[in-house]
Length: 352
Ligand code: MRU
Image 1 (cartoon, rainbow, N blue to C red):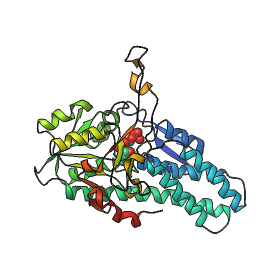
Image 2: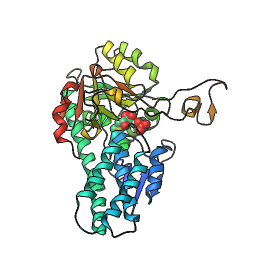
Image 3: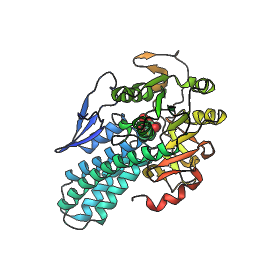
Image 4: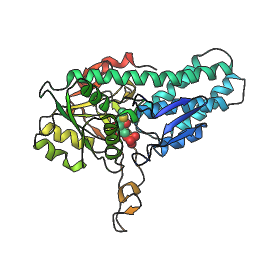
């Protein structure tokens, strides 16, 4: 945290990466220092760092941390070893495409840069820093573009969000919470409704923490209260993030997003997905092709150290679901908000 109140989940400091440990918030604000790529991979798996764009930034630094350990002057041997490091970082989490996008941007940079291996290493560090800086600006642009398409009435909006698509999930501003932040700065926000987001409670722990930290009014609800809140006229718009968006606009996001989209449509409440172009996977024609991460069942059967269920029950713990494009009012990118069917126009703008 800097004294400007801004939250940066990933910071490059001298010769190492400093991560906010998101598994300990809100009870404790602690940081973890990462100097080796294996530790970065572990931090992504254990969700010390999480959220699609933040995972991308962390993985980019992971590639550099691995690169600087490679002990060869031979360029093609360096690239071979770098590919193996990339493979380990890619195997951490399957759904957020920003991870794969950032790693391939790093590898492309290494392949396309001429010069000695030491110079390649320096350029890789600069590319990781560029990916991070770009994401910060991109999220601010998403916030502003989102503000333009929010409903015009009422003047002060009640926005429901799911999971945490905030500063903690990005380089430091947020996608869905970026729109919320921009609305708050413009005087267009009454309050945020945050879904708690079972099983890992990113809404209750992280979104609530970010809002309180910044003085944005926030009301926490359990996931199963959303339809009731909409029916009571408490919600003017839903804004969520995404982990991977297929070319047709189907969007994978934290489990529970799909049901939220259905109830929003039933109540004629606009449903926005806010995400950078780095979250769009133009290779996938539709959402059925998006790999869905399954996590440990203990996330479902216990809270903290307390087991909730009797022994003998079976569990299913998909971490994400896919909201079909037909339920999405608009996808808000840094280049503007478009109907899901119009996403293709951005393909040539995506950095590779
Ligand atoms: O499992 P997580 O906490 O990494 O999931 C995060 C989400 O689903 C976010 O909504 C998504 O990554 C967008 S973050 C800007």
